[in-house]
Amino acid sequence: MLGNFSYHNPTKLYFGEDSLSNLKTELANYGKNILFVYGGGSIKKSGLYDEIITILNECGKNVAEVAGVMPNPTSDKLNEGVAIAREHKTDFILAVGGGSVCDFSKAVSVSVNCGDDPWEKYFIRFEEPTCEIVPVGCVLTMAGTGSEMNGGSVITNHEAKLKIGHVFGDDVMPKFSILNPRYTMTLPKYQMAAGIYDILNHICEQYFSGEDDNTSDYISEGLMKSLIHSSRIAVENPQDYEARSNIMWTATWALNTLVSRGKSEDWMVHMLGQAVGAYTDATHGMTLAAVSLPYYRYIMPYGLKKFARFATEVWGVSAEGKTDEQLANEGLFAMESWMKEIGLVMNISELGATEDMIEGIADATIILNGGYNVLDRDEIVQILKASM
Ligand code: NZQ
Ligand code: ZN
Image 1 (cartoon, protein in one colour):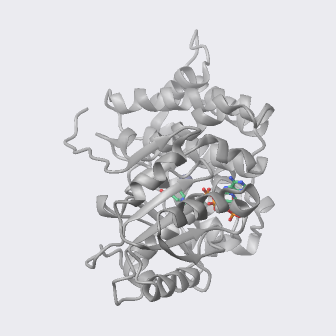
Image 2 (cartoon, rainbow, N blue to C red):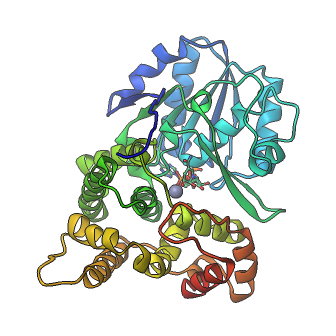
C-alpha cells in the first residue's frame, strides 16, 4: 500500500431476507414528503410495490411517484423526475429497483434545488453540487452496479449520443440500502448474467493497474473467486439463495471504493462499454462483456505479471513450467469460457452495433490513463472492430 488515501463510506446496509423490516425505522429520520422512484414495472409484478406502499402509508408519509425509470436512464427522464420532485417539495427519495433507479435517484437528488440544467452541470461540466442535496435511500432488486453503496450516477443523453457517469461524494451516497437477495430472484437470466459480469468487471477495472504488493488486490481476488463460484451455481439454479446472496454482497464490495484504495484504476472497459451503450442502448453488463476480451488481449503485454497472477490466483491455472505470457493467455481463455458458460454476449454486433457506428463510438469513448497502457483513438477503433 504505497499511496496515501482516505476511506469512508457513509451508507448503512441492511442485508438479508428480513431487511425490509428496517425501512420504517429509517424513514422515521426524514420528512413527510417522499418521492418513490421505480422502474418499468418489475416491482409491481413481484408484489414489492404493494409492500413499499403499505409501509409508506403506515409511516404516514405523503407519497409522489416517478415510475418508468428505464434501464440506462435518460437526461429527459431526469428532467421529468426533477420537476415532480420540486412540485412535491420532496424531503426524501426512495429508490426501489436496479442500478438505473438508484443512479437516477441520485441525479434527481442533486438537481432538485439547483437552477442549472443537470445534464450540462454534472455530466458535461462535471461540477459538484452546490445546492442542498435531497437524501436518497435504496431498496435494491438487481445485483451488479454497486450503486447501492457508492456515489455513482450514469445518465444517457440520446440526442448527444453520450452516456456519462459522475461519481459524486459522500453526501450523495445513499443514506441506507436494503439488500434482500430474494428480490433478485425474479430477474430474467439475461439480466442476472449481465449483473454478474458487471461485478467481475468492476473488480477487474481496479485490479489491472499498479505493480506494488497491495492488499486491495488480494481482497479483489477473493471477491472474484466467490463471484465465479456462486455464478456457476446461480446459472444452474437461479433460486439458490446462498449463491444469490453471495453475488449480491460481492456486487456491493466490488464498487464501494474499498478495493481501489492505494491504487490507480483502469476503467477503460467501462468507457468503451458506455460508448457502445450510448449508440445501442444495450444492457450495461453485456456491453462490457462484448468489449472486454479484445481490450484485455490488447493491453495484456503491458501488464503481463498481473495477468499471469490473475490466471493462477483467480482462475486456478497451474503455473508449472509456464512463462508469464502463457499463463496470462490461459487466464483470459479461462475467463472467456466462463463468460460463455454463464450466457454473456461476446460481441457488440449482437447488441446492435454496426460498422458505420464504429467511428462515432470511438469519438464517444473517454480515454483514461490509470491502466497498464493509455490507448489512442486508433487503438480504440481497433479494439471496437475486434469486438464486432
Ligand atoms: O425497470 P424494471 O421493470 O424494474 O426492470 C428492470 C430492467 O428492465 C429489470 N429488473 C431489475 N430488478 C428486477 C428486474 N426484473 C425482474 N426482477 C427484478 N428483481 O432489470 C432491467 C435492468 O435494470 P437496471 O436497473 O437497468 O440494471 P442495472 O442494475 O444493471 O443498472 C444499469 C445502470 O447502472 C449504470 C449503468 O450504466 C446503467 O445505466 N451503472 C451504474 C454504476 C454506479 N452507480 O456506480 C456503475 C456501473 O458501472 C454502471 O455504469
Ligand atoms: Zn459497471
